[in-house]
Length: 585
Image 1 (cartoon, rainbow, N blue to C red):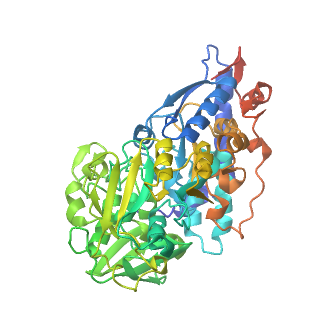
Image 2 (image 1 turned 45 degrees about the horizontal axis):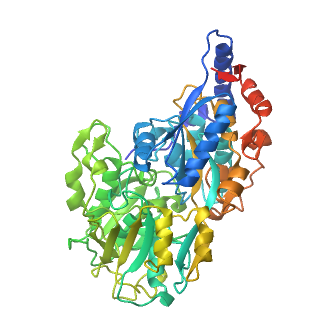
Image 3 (image 1 turned 90 degrees about the vertical axis):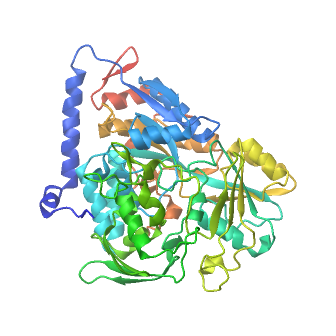
């Protein structure tokens, strides 16, 4: 695999990242002043893409407020509501957008920013740098935090996030709480948002045992489709595919717990590596044995879904950030594999062990090239997914349910030798996801006793309906997820970080939290949260962030609406001018 460590020469050139950044901004100033003096200027225009209100009312409302504020600031801003699958294709596959608003699932570690922003991923698909962001100083910060020792990493992350606050490839608006409804007699340790959440529900002693499946309520269109874990527009039932495809390790309460791996022996002499020993008797859902060759194949497939048939490779649009941590693999025997890592630390490298494993005997036949940059592996619907999880896929033949059954051959079933998080597992005979067309229909399923718990987000406006019902209750917790505004750096104006900074200010985050999210969220207002890192998601006691400069964050208006007397000078200060209220290029 490609070595991502920067060369000594490059480090010398980037030693003063602030100098590089200022040089870049100076060039932008010159260009903008030149444009401002050119006659016949056009109005700045951009489109804003988001899903319709029926799919995500919060994202749709943020996009609507953003369009209004951009328009008031003199920008010709046009709304483009698109279905979620189409939004993912436009943003994550085609780069066909100016500005987008979406709910991001959040980061498992700040190193996730490496895959999201590093310029090495320009041209790749998925959440690999969809902003077309190319700043060498940012690359340097991203690489340095990955290489830093455990003691030094917090300070390096401070440098990285401070830089991103200035450069603004994207900006977070708010970190919503996850709200779950459940039958009053059903105990929910925490709102289910991933495979681990469902497994905890299945293990919770107060909720069983019973001979029926765990009934989960979700809502939306097309939720029984796209069961491909590598696809950009993969199935949108959060955690479903992770229930089917197990990793070597899972992150449980901040710690990496061996899962399909029996053990991981780490060695640092001569470069970081780990020797993975798989648990004995692992099987895929179709009865085929799971071995170390499947582990090596998974990493190879994510690096190049064409499996060597295309020069330069065609990487998978998912899990790339984690896969790039692994430099090479060495299969020792059927149960043993060694992973060699790029210049990084054990704490960061362990993220690679959370990649879901793929069966080579199925996915090796999906390397065929379909278009110039797409293979069957990236686009296949995977109608009958074969994984190795504690539950196996049974059926999604209709639009209103997805059924999973216990995988009796899993090594964690019928034994007490399993992670403590599975103590008491399982209290149910499978899991059934009942799909409702909208949030109101999902609410009715809950109140009528047809489901045990909801998994899709309950919109703030529906919370009181559930709390007012006599037989149900709600559970709420903070999550890693955040609503983001993303900027396409290839757009003529958005390529300028000064312009992006002003655009990032034209949304009233406090108003969004209080009025749109009805208080069920925290405002992005400090350096980590503006970069999408929730305080609860990352302990940074050793990292000292300065308060953001009000000139970077303050909303130029009140109660969600822009005050033109305050917004126009922001653009004029970076070289733009106005004609009859229109912001000119």
